[in-house]
Image (cartoon, rainbow, N blue to C red):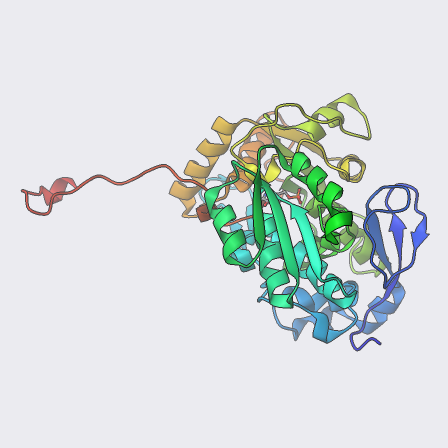
Length: 403
Ligand SMILES: *Cc1c(COP(=O)(O)O)cnc(C)c1O
């Protein structure tokens, strides 16, 4: 039944470790927590070598031995390219600060990684209808991949989601509902309706495969840096899929003997208007309470409650990292600064990581000698930008030297 070299053995509750069977549809574990996919990593290490990777296409599926899809025909592909590491050569002032620019992926955000896997697995397991709550980018990626796979999709977003996101979700074939609430309110609608409507719930971490897709950021980063992980990773954290996924990737690479014990400091970056993980980190708790009245321009990280909070906080603490909040003013200023100086238009969430880097450098939590990777998770052009340009009357006199 399998024509791809896959090594999935079972799935495991992220909280209790209890096992559930692979090759079946799952949402949360029986205990109500996110499920993690487990592999025969010794087997994977025999089937795949670092050298073997070199001849493969520069795309996400090059790591197929560490991914769950069993049949090639179920891979839903829109060209999941490897994303570049762009140094902030001017702004970093001699320090090594690399932006992993995820805006180059299909649907112009890293949600493509997660949804490519979630939809491929849904296809493999016979799903015909999917639903999700979204702040925009996840819905756009779900719409694109599900339409391509011939799966019907219903998406619920807050009614103040960036306009481009709402338009692209609909333009890629999903039915879109704009809800007078936040993403967790949208999530409740999916939960309440899934029985009656027959939807498979693909909410963040409520199915096991989006993590596997986001895990490829960690695999790719390790490979691009020649298997030397950076000193710190600044990750704009909403539901935390990517941070959890990269942490998992590093553990798998170590188990395969491809990297050593060294880990980057995992730094969860949030907006000060919605910082449940930062608050829990400071309070020393393993779970994060709901953040009331969440607001920030960085829509992708406006997540008041994360079901994988303990997985995020565990990874941050084990790595010796920290959680840090930056305000909207600092986020927008960071976006302007990087755009003007480096020619790289970050999304607000990505800009938050540059603002956080400067803060952490200032208070000594990061050293100038640290090699740091910042995640820019989406193309900056997906977000509202200020009006620009000066009107010019082509019929009047023009002082060219002053333009
Ligand atoms: C979803 C999203 C995030 C947060 O990602 P998680 O892995 O869910 O924490 C950050 N930035 C952008 C642009 C996003 O779309």
